[in-house]
Image (cartoon, rainbow, N blue to C red; front, side, top):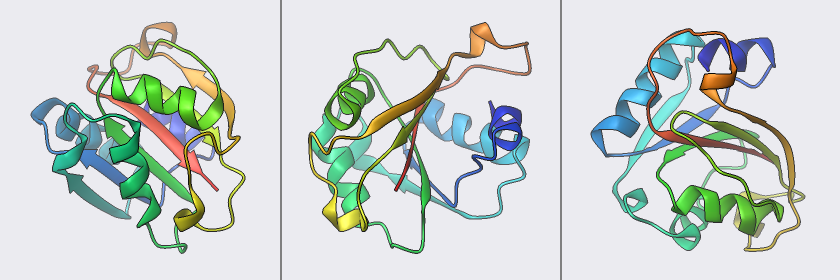
Length: 141
């Protein structure tokens, strides 16, 4: 998935990952594979969280970051996808969803913000390139 981020021009400027071991490992694998040189933040509130917890953390992101990746857990991320983009989708381990959000500032992010699901990639539908890990959702303003 890290290679995909590079190929698609989607290397994030910030990664926010759950503190859970599998999610942290996923974030580490991604940072290595996409040559990420930005900041990775660990967020304990993502474990067993609903969409409100993810949104609250994203609202506090600096507007210097246009591309943010969230590494977390289901069912919270699947519900977050539905809440932000109005799309229902299964996110298997290691899946990557690209969401475009119609906001000017992260603080403006709200549930049912009218985002658009731009793309959804599943590791098992891509050529093999490594281990599966936690689920990921990438957001961009």
